[in-house]
Length: 466
Image (cartoon, rainbow, N blue to C red; front, side, top):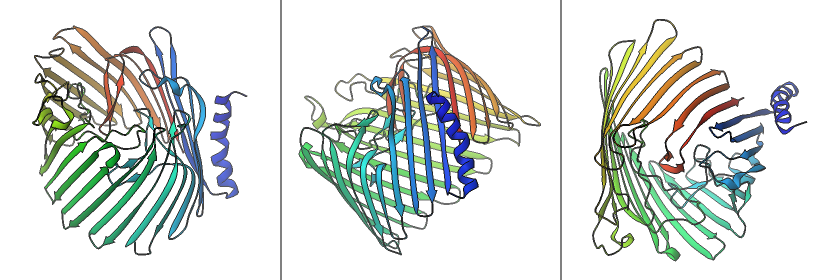
C-alpha cells in the first residue's frame, strides 16, 4: 500500500476508533500544497500532524513529505521524514516533555523555536523540557535541552540548553533567561531580562538581551494604551550583532506587514547587524468609521556601516487606513502608504521611494453571496516604477469562492502578474485551486521573509483538520 493510501486510511479510522473505544481524544490534520509549473515540473509540500490526549498524558507526531520542495523552499527538504514526535505529561504544577517541541524565551530575541509552513521555517528542538509553577503562578520555571532541527532530521554537532524563571507580583512580571549554545564551531552563552507592568488600559514591557561572545545586545520597549474608542501602541527596538548562525531566535521586522499586493511589493527585512527602529500604531473608532494610522522608522547603526559615524535611514513607512460601514450591505476601505527603503541598509545614500493607494470594498447581496473588489496603484520613480493592480472575489456563505487578480507593471517591464482560482470549504476540509504568473520577490509572514522566485503554474491546496 502506498504512503498516500496509508495516510488516508489512518485519517479515516483513527478518530472513529479512538472515540468509540474511549481511548482519549485524537486531533490532527493533513495539509498538501502542490504546483505544476509551466515547464511540466511537479513539486509538492505535504504535512501530516496527529496529537493524542488522554488525561494528563499527550503524544504526537508530524510527518512531512517533499517529492520535490516547492520553489523558494530549501531543496534539502526533499524526501520523507518524521521530524516531529513527542510524549508529555502535564500535572497540576509541573510538566515534562520528551521529543520535539517548540519554546520561546521572552519576546523571542534570545530563543524562539517555531513553525511557519508559508515560510518553510521549522526549528523545533529535539530533547527534553521540564516546567514548574506555583499554585498561584507567582513563580514559574522551565528548563530545556536538546538539538535543533535541520531539514528532516537534526543539525549535526549543534546543541543548546537553557532555562527561564519568572516572578509575578500582581500586575508586575519579571523574567530572566539564560541559554548555552554550540553551533558546531564553539560554545556561547547569552541571557535576557524582561519586565512588564499593566494597570487599567495601560501596559508596558521592556527587555534586555545580551550575547557577549558575538558582542551582541538588544533592547526592546513596548508601550500600549487602550480605552473604548481609541487604542495606541509604541514599540522601540535596538539590535546589534544579533544574527544567530543556528537560526534559533526571532527577529521580525518592526514595520507594518501589509496585506495589499502593491504595499507589500518591496518589504523591509530586519538588519540584525545593527538597527534602531520604532513603530507606532493608533486605532480610533467613531460610530461606523474606523481609523488606523501606522508609522515606522528604522535606522542602521554606525557600528554596522562602513565608514559612517552617524545613524543612516534604512526604512520608513507612514500608512493610513480608513474603514467605513455604510449599511448592512456595503463596507469600504481607503488605504495609503508612503514608503522609502534603503536597499543597502544605509551603506549608500540612494533610496527607493514609493507611494501606494488602495480602494477596497465589500458588498453583501441579499442571500448568501458577497463581492469584494480592490483597486491599487503604486507610484515610484525608482526600481520598476509605476504599478497598478486589481482583484475581484465572489464568495458564498456555503463555503465556496472564486477570484481573479492582476498586477501590471506599466512603469518599465510592461508585464502582468495574474492569478485566477476557486476554493471550497466544508467543516474541517478545504480545497483551493489556482493558476497564475507570480512575481519574484519576498514572501513575508509575521515580519519574517523568504525569497520566492518567479514562476507560472497551477497550484492545488488541500487542508483537512479534525
